[in-house]
Image (tube, rainbow, N blue to C red; front, side):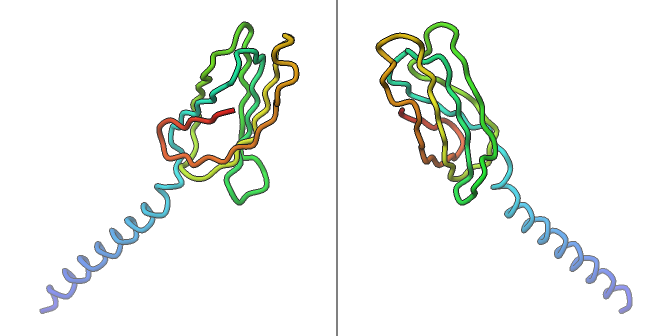
Length: 125
C-alpha cells in the first residue's frame, strides 16, 4: 500500500506541472511577436519618404517604428514587414512628398487604427 501512494503523487505532480505549462502557454502565446505585413496604399507616386510609428492601443508611448525612403518614384502599394504581437495598434504616419507641384499641397500626416492578426494589413492614405 505504501507503493501506491507515491505513484499517485507522481501522477498528480505531473498533472499540476502540465496544467501550469498549458496556462502559461495560453497567456504567453498571443503576446509573442509574429510577422506582420503592412501595406500602405499611397494615393500618388510622389513620395520621397514614409515615416511610421506604432503604439499598442491603450499605451501612451510608441513601441517602435520605421522609415522608408524612395530615391526615385515610390510604388503605389508600399509593403513593409514588422515583427509585432497580434492586437490593436495606432499608427502615426508621415509622408514626405517629393518636390513636384502635384504633391506639394497634399495631406502628409495620418493617424490610423489597425488590428493586426498576422498576414497582410492594408492601410489607405
